Amino acid sequence: QPNAMGGREVGGLANQLAAHEDFSDPVGIERVEEFWSAPRIAHKEGLKAIDMFTALEHGDVKIIWIMGTNPVVSMPNANQVKRALEKAELVIVSEAMLDCDTLAYADI
Image (cartoon, rainbow, N blue to C red):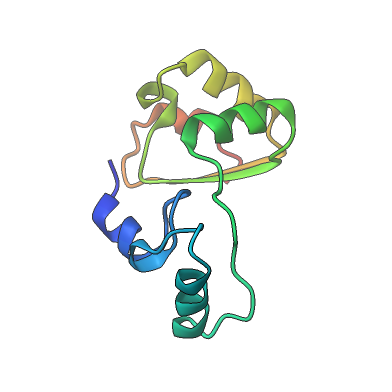
């Protein structure tokens, strides 16, 4: 699993903002906007991994960038992940390991 603690701290997870601020707290959203000097940030949760591959399979998500993980073997429904990656308009995989099953679906 990629660095989950770092993901939580900088807002890299789909269900919370940076510094563990919650999407349901307008004050927390404002703090993150101010800290990052960002005029606009997300105000609702994004898609979690399983939901993201479902959206990719249905065409609601067109492009995916996969970093440091191998969802073709690590996700619960590998066949759905494969179907979703085959339907994507663009698949980018950033991976340090050459022997990674997900690389077979990468455009870049």
